[in-house]
Length: 358
Image (cartoon, rainbow, N blue to C red; front, top):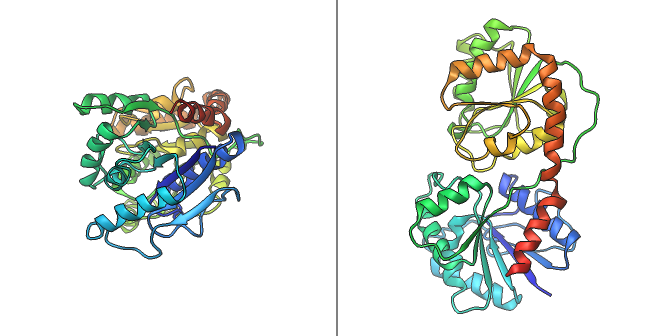
């Protein structure tokens, strides 16, 4: 039997990579005969998301350490873990960690998969990720990207690629939802309050929208460093009655059910999980057309893509959709149909095919 191990930062975290790793690991246990482990570089003994009891969890370090100053120790610990637990295939859940895993697996008969969760054109402020991607392209057996576009970016951006590159989308964490929709006049946005997510641009759009249709409300679910800046914009432009910064929640599905429209204002994305979630709830979407993610996820749904930074068009597209209930109903139906291809069973079959090929 093959022993599959996922390596990630900290399984205790509540982020998107931890969430989707849990989904894939749970599905592998359910739909395949693989033994599955998850190794956290730090922590990981108290997973935030529900994990199948058959999955083994391990931690490389109990407390946060400086990986830069402990590079060789980290490499040695990973190698020792792989050998002691007889791991056949290692799946690295962030390309940057390949800096450790490539030397750790040197000379071992272990298949090595780099699972890229970000857009190749952005290193998310981590310069070592560029080096890690170059190493992964040369020394990993396979690189899994989340979109076909990002797969092309890898091929176009690197000269020496020995690894095979496979595009496999993330699974949707929700089944297709069946509930009675009410006209609540709520526009929803979900994400970390950071520059990447572009909520500053969304508020600029909403300033125009609110003047045209003042009885609708915007709810932004999430928290982050930009909260004070966004709050100041809301106060300065007298939007306190129409905009709510909800903060974090462990029940985001409630907000999807209450909303009529979803907005994605990101400057860039890898594979926005929030859009998968909107499909399951049948929400019509107005989104900035990031280089990777929205175009593929929203294809064939009639949701609206707006060229990056076109604030006026984003606002007018949102206003038109708010006024057109029939179009929202049509998108609702098409979105739920599209959601079916992102259900875990469909996605895990692609992973099993990849793992079997190794």
